[in-house]
Amino acid sequence: MKKTVLSCIQPTGEMHYGNYFGAVKNWVDLQEQYDCFYGVVDYHAMTMPYNTKKLRQDSWDLIFNLLAVGVKAENLFIQSLVPEHVELGWIFNNFASYGRVQKMTQFKDKSKDSSSKNKDKFISVGLFDYPVLQAADILIYRADFVPVGKDQDQHLELTREIASRFNNQVGKEYFVLPETLHTETPKILSPADPTRKMSKSAGEKHWISVFGEENRIRKQIRSAVTDTGEPKEENEMSAGLVNLFTLLKAAGNDSIHAALMQSYKNGDLRYSDLKDATADALVNLSNNFREKRAELVANKKEIKGQIKQSSKAIRARAQQTLKEVKELTGLMNV
Ligand code: ADP
Image (tube, rainbow, N blue to C red; front, top):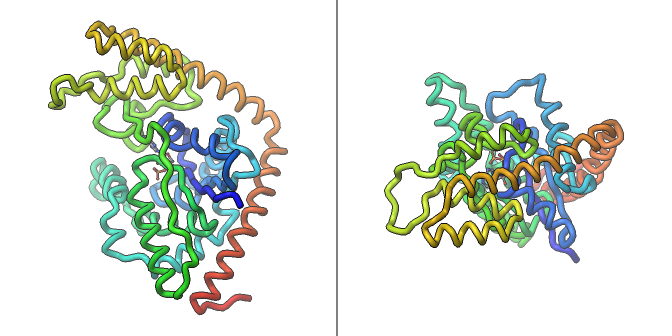
């Protein structure tokens, strides 16, 4: 029996190289070896202020992005086509500790990010509760492994706690306790501020689009911050340089990476050479991805049909788990 892998991504606009090198690249690589479920989680995208007229289009756009980078259609589903996630999420609310959920740093970051711009900004209960729904996303497929970026470690820990508490209460090792799988680059930093992670919520200059145009990518890399003035140990590479080297290596340019790293060690690295090589590598990847995406979009109708079908097939797995959970917890099954 193949082990099961689950991972999800929110349809909140474009995909950036943090998402790709931190998680989605792994999704693609794991498909041969595991039984994979990859979700576009639109219920999660409602937790921050969003545009009701755009959400459905954003979900389809993300589906095309994922297909363009190599995720297989049969492994993809859209979360709102598998509403059992939400039902299990409610059940899990009763197995999740309020005190623990309160400690989630993503909630603190996301509620702070928005409130710093506007003190009266609306913070939803959904944003607070999102890690519990995420536990349901994972456990509903009884996933063994969850390929995510490092920013998700704390949520995975919470998922394991919910699973344990559930297992204890029903007196059965029903849920597997899932493990995270990190890529070699679990944390990509913002080019404009390498003290923080690459993220869309921080603003335009803090993320590089996987489907970005050449000019924009080159401009972003050229202006990438290499020295933030943060105190560091002697001989320690600055976070900005580490990030450029990380991007270059992740993009697959091992020999250029090795040569430039040697220059760095010799003390004669020209930052412009590192930036040019990194920009070349990303532009090359992005051009290929954009081309692939355009081909897929030309068959839009057929592909949407495929995704509805795969969501339906995946839903059957989720329904089976939910049925067993309802049985175990004393709820009614029809
Ligand atoms: P969230 O907003 O909850 O992090 P996203 O949809 O933005 O969800 O993230 C999708 C995936 O990309 C997650 O696995 C997340 O860990 C990963 N990810 C996001 N930003 C980064 C980053 N800067 N570096 C590495 N991985 C990242």
